[in-house]
Length: 230
Image (cartoon, rainbow, N blue to C red; front, side, top):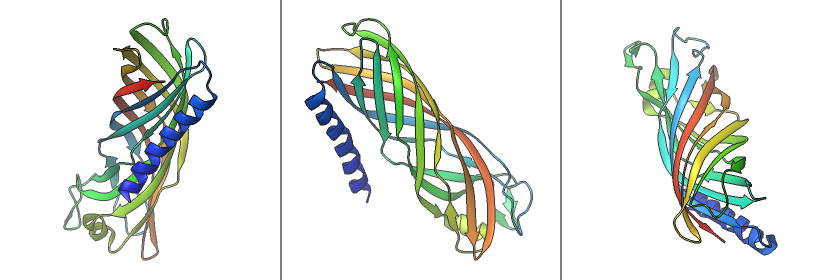
């Protein structure tokens, strides 16, 4: 499954590049590959529902994943970026009391969540396209979909048995700032920092007992990548 997802992601980026090259005339195109370092600045309401002690909350751990992007130059200073990370697994941890009954809670991994989060950005690049260093800023939209949600053994024990998880998709704004260093005619390094808004509601179902909390998090993504222009 993981190989299939990454193959499809690479195929999408390459297909976009090929289509743009066919139709692009003199406008340059970039394909980039690198690493996403994602930290979640998250807040959540306390979990509510039947037989739920007060003060139970969740936090989300940081992840590192593969970064892929296609960048299309629209004009001298304007470009559009489609960024896509390999879907990582993020762990939700218990936050609140040390125990629930006799079971450890605070800091325990209670669920694993895999997500896809493509982002489309319109960017303004400073200086001449021929400059070695080109800072840029951008604004766009992020779409986040949670594709695999699993309760851990610890989470199931705390919930009272086998439990399913739902998390609706989110659409929100995204901003970015970065710099590109061109070290040859076609090759370049890029470093950037992006922030997106993601809102959802985590709902668990344990034999018909529903518990939920609202989750608001701002993925802060540092990116380093190498790119090729054509």
